[in-house]
Length: 197
Image (cartoon, rainbow, N blue to C red):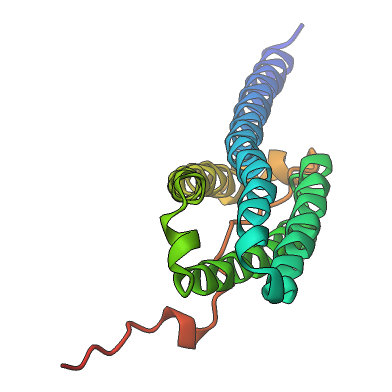
């Protein structure tokens, strides 16, 4: 075998080793994203399990606020369906967007329920309602941390998959850019409240 053939063979071997290394790293990062979404999913399930109990406690006190209670239950169902779609296809930007939108609607309806509950001193003082509200608040905090961890993993993957020369392997092997979880709040909701005395 000639020297040129050995050089070509050496370059091919180095290129293959590099491609396999990059591929394995992308797979590892994709799996970390799946794990990060799994943590979100655990908190979402906990949240979805708390909501019917919260609504049931409130139902006795808020008999004439049925529309508020029904809106929470409907939003919960839509959010559960959106979460199932993301579980089935975590790399789908449209599924992730639908989940964010459904979670926004659920958060809004839960917020309205809490505002209505504030107007009822007996409900506000109910020990079960207080306990469920605290659990829901704790779950929301955990969910926020889990979303941040997901976005950190998605960012690391997207950076790796978009940087040259690794993007060659990412494109050839079909690694799509992973969508980030974003807030569905509009600019008015994001604005800091004005406090006047």
